[in-house]
Length: 454
Ligand code: GAP
Image 1 (cartoon, helix red, strand yellow):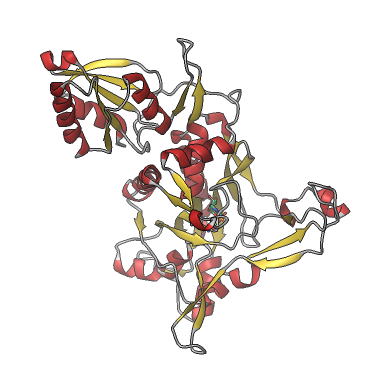
Image 2 (image 1 turned 180 degrees about the vertical axis):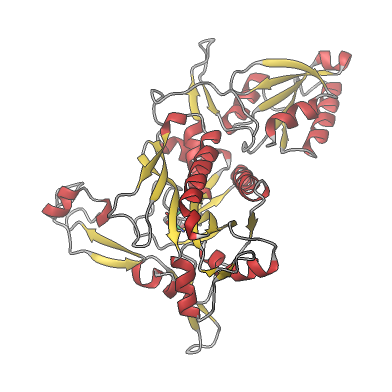
């Protein structure tokens, strides 16, 4: 992957308050509250022009790294709605629940598993000290109905985790592709949860997008592949962030592990919210395929082509979120930097160039000089075919640089009077604000080498 030398940052750098990210996202068209004109819906968001570019880049980069670059991994795209029995087999109908209490005094609602132990023991609200209600249980699956005739409609669910399609399609993939164990199936797709306490912007939503790898192995090779993917996924996240010391593994304690799991790790990232999960690496063993075999009465075992051994494969899962990645990368990238010249400070998003929503901005030095504008438009049109580019001729050049810094554009190309003489341009880099002079002919390759993954 293209490496950039970002300014070294350490844990001394203060955490970015969430409100700053929320405000920037709205102001610059990354994220909007869903149905805002009707006062919004908690835990549901829309993505604006820059947000959709950033999401697409995050998704594409994950897909490239996980599917395209691994000979033993293929991708699928499953439907959001599945047969309702899927969710019985997966255990979600029975167990996908949050236990909640309400404060009788301030009316706030809390998940019991998020409360400090002393508040649970004393039955006391952590905010106002008021008395808490008896716990109530809520299922997180979102219900929906198939069919139009009342009484004949089938109740089913919007998928509560995207990965179930991968188990459902396992046999089809084996039969239709030339994959052999060990191999993996990847998918990126929406998931829906009736989170009772959505919040912290994109961190906990009701509609969100997950990416999963389910890697199928022989039981004797489980540990080795678990270790392999655990390290690979850590490396992926580490390559994208500036604050490398804010990323770590947290191993699940024995009380957190599913009964079939020998190990589970969360890759966690530290923000203003503290250390929180970014992605889970799970030891799923033969749980999923065995359960779906049992509930569907279909044979989901695998036969080894060489040894003829027949077995239910074990699974290593790596499961993360597009939205959480979106949020964490913004929190990681945001910086307000004092101007060395002592004027206005600048807000800069130090996003890795491969995921930055706009790769380059083309800026004529002045907009009232026709030759500058014509040349700049020409350069812009050429670059636009290769990468997401913007053309901007409004306001002085310093203001235009700042506008691009704030949305994370890694390069600005300025067309000035020298350009008209020798067909060279100034390329200004976002993080260090350094400038180089290169010829227009060299420009596309110069930029492509820096903003695309390879
Ligand atoms: N298949 C396993 C699974 O779904 P999970 O820990 O519930 O595991 C995986 O979810 C990832 O999905 C999390 O690490 C997180 O990145 C993302 N995620 C989960 N719930 C979310 C929510 N309510 N809002 C946004 N992202 C969420």
